[in-house]
Image (cartoon, rainbow, N blue to C red; front, side, top):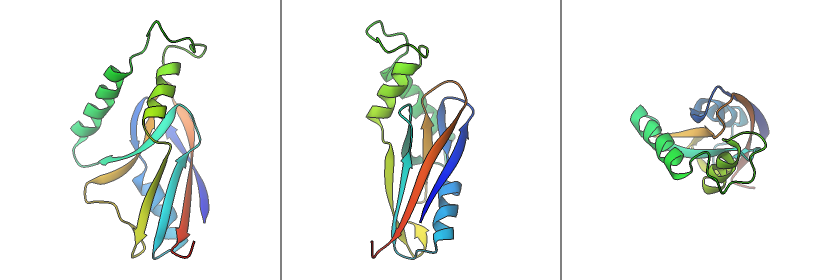
Amino acid sequence: MVRELTIHTPAQGLHEITREVRGVVAESRVDEGLCTVFVRHTSASLTIQENADPSAKRDLEQWLKRLIPEHDPLYTHTAEGPDDMPSHIRSALTATSLSIPIVGGSMALGTWQGIYLWEHRRAPHDRRVVVHVADEGF
């Protein structure tokens, strides 16, 4: 089963999409298998991170901004603004797809784990995320 989700990101940062992906897994009725999540963009990414304490999310966002700053004079790809090239680097260093086992009809996420779409651009976007759910016989 394959579903494409459209996720609106109002701004740069981590946006939890666990509920939306969980809904696709439930709809699939797969008991044992694999859920693959893929973002169809070069300036956004995916990650599995803690979803209990908001300070973890803030710290991750701030750390990546410090690691890959805007306005680096070495950037040449700047046609779409100062956040353009940093967004591509951030996406390259993180992940564009995730694989999550399905056990007993549910994603085998840990207690404090959530699935996040990481928007690397400052402006709002509608991001396309493909969710593929396959049973163990795939």
